[in-house]
Amino acid sequence: MFELFLKGGAPYMTLLTLILLALLLASWKAPAWVKEIGLIALIVGVLSTFLGFYIAADDISKAGDIPQGIIWGGLRVAVITTMYGLFIYLLSLIIRIIQKSRI
Image 1 (cartoon, rainbow, N blue to C red):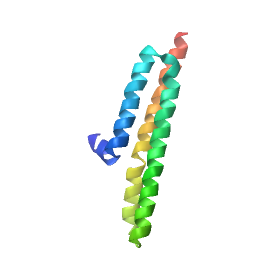
Image 2 (cartoon, rainbow, N blue to C red):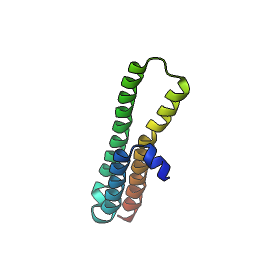
Image 3 (cartoon, helix red, strand yellow):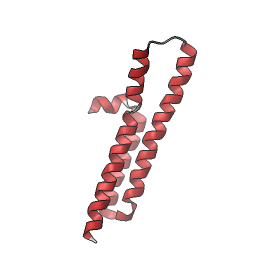
């Protein structure tokens, strides 16, 4: 798991982990914010992936001919933050469903 954290980019993965902690805290202290915090995680994950794509496209255009294996390996790494953001959003929806059943 720690390997995925480092591959996904420490700044974005750290930010998403802080959002996850905020989600867990909000599920206890501010239940109305759970879904919104999950959406923020999803947006941060997707935004960081697109930023990675943008930087990679710039580097690829400067380098010229790059083997497809390297490009696909980079794409595989780039979607790690989106998957983490999706996981946090899914968790927020599950927490929200559990909280609604208590009302």
